[in-house]
Length: 322
Image (cartoon, rainbow, N blue to C red; front, side, top):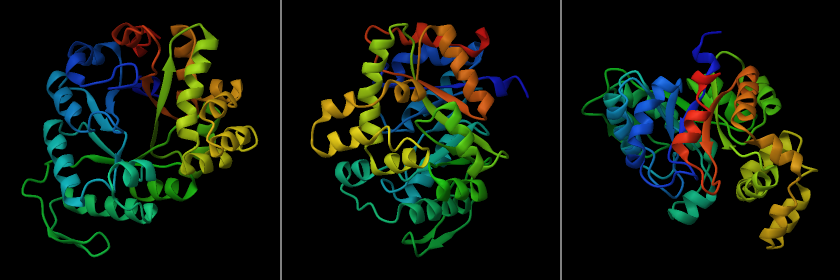
């Protein structure tokens, strides 16, 4: 195992560091020396996935960059290829395009786009991107693409990672992608995911970290975060598959009844402790090593902990300190 295999990446922006990455320039510049493997962007209702990485590519020219993840429904295939090619040009050999199905809430409710056949859309977009980023002229009737060719294909096409939860998408990632990105998992869950995905390719996941020794506070924050995700149909099915269906039954019943507070309160402590990393910096680093031991590259994202200094937190959890 190489030294890099014993390290983790950082996500920016995060709930604890909202807004543009521009305010975190000094932190981004410091990441290579701190031992982080890279910087990953997220795309929900804040900044888009690509612009922060464009800034980071200039601040830390040796840093690996990635998206975790870009929804395949919310951009046309050609535009997605253009944006990926631009980042690959800015960070040659260092950019990973993470794509996925996202959710009906993001695609349909926020963007007004039908959320149809997510597996097929992810598969076909992956295949289109492979060809387009290699400079080929592509026609794909399933995606509605006719004769698209990039004017400037990147000399080094980006690697592509698929967001994958359950077996079907994990197996697609194993067959056709360069890596997979999962989410809201414990170290034990990683072993179950690896059983479907295999051990030949990189597996990554955003990991929510709350560096506080106030366990009660961490669990209150963690329950609020988890309730918003675990009630999404894809995540509910994922955690049923992982064996948490019984423990999360009360969450889903309260959520269906419209009682959001009761739903969050119904998440057991052990589920929060499984899925949220919290405690002292030393305890958090130990937990992150458990993910590494299970075969996962963690992408550390700091949760909305009141008063958290993200720069200090990133330094206190730096892989180089372990």
